[in-house]
Length: 422
Ligand SMILES: *Cc1c(COP(=O)(O)O)cnc(C)c1O
Image (cartoon, rainbow, N blue to C red):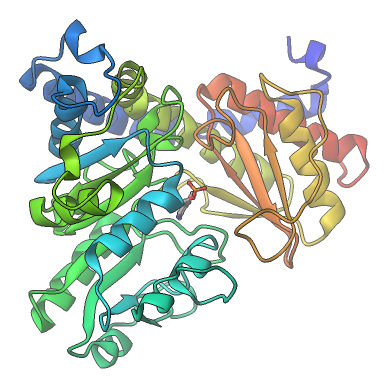
């Protein structure tokens, strides 16, 4: 079958060798997926999920049992007191925006301790001018502490940056489009311990995008007060059509709910339409699908490293998200890689991705995504800003075997274009 996809014998030979070496890594990934699957199953059992939870409501959506129970299940799975899981969140950025506006007030300072947040948040915070209604517009200040050499948390600088105005300590777990390390939950635990030692009232908020179910625990299990993510990434399991979640302390979640809907209405209204079933099913699949995405990332890293490219993380390194970064050092190879990934997609395999000016990003970006759900990056996808050193950020795949095929097609594209010798 690989031959029918035009994968050469040589590449297939290399792939088989690489894959054999990954047996232990894959076994580890399976163990984590098994643990998290049981965690999710237990939450479904504890909350007596049944058919009636899948019935959608319309209009105001009062007493939507499915919606309210899903909040409780997310809270249990994520080690939080409460959660707000809604298809009404249009993206991860929207959920993060609701959380930031929900908990910050004029005069407060937001302190990011993992460097510059994800690109789309620059206009939300007001780091990049342009959009009306940023946090800055509302008199909310922003400060950031960079990671030392893109890796280590700068505790001294965090200590100096904290004053009476700082209300929220902001952690981005995943690397986004940055050349920086991904944080694991042990790192988050250390930050929580440190900042709460300075002021126990500080709110630790985590952008949890791409991190869910990668480890056995989630940031709330290690003391984070609020976590936020997208349902077209890990926790939607490839099933959720859209949406996001916020989970954490009861009062903080209530503040966010009041911001999403209205003060006084909060979590108690909002029709689920027919979205409940897919969100339940997605959460149920999420531990397994995240494992498949992790295997795809590990395989891609090992294969491209064997072909001479710089990759991060390496196969054996501990992971905090599902992203694999491959450095190409020139735009031609990067674009060819993305075209190859696109050609391995189940949907739109015949189209050619081109770099473009995407809303929310300040450089051109090329995105390979042939997904059942538009833009879903729990499905196999590769994004890359067209800037040096020309890195592709690869993530996803609903199944390892299709992910592996996509990665092989990308490698084959480089071979056919004579961008590498094999
Ligand atoms: C994906 C992502 C977001 C949110 O992005 P959306 O495309 O708006 O869902 C935020 N932070 C990080 C680290 C992400 O990976």
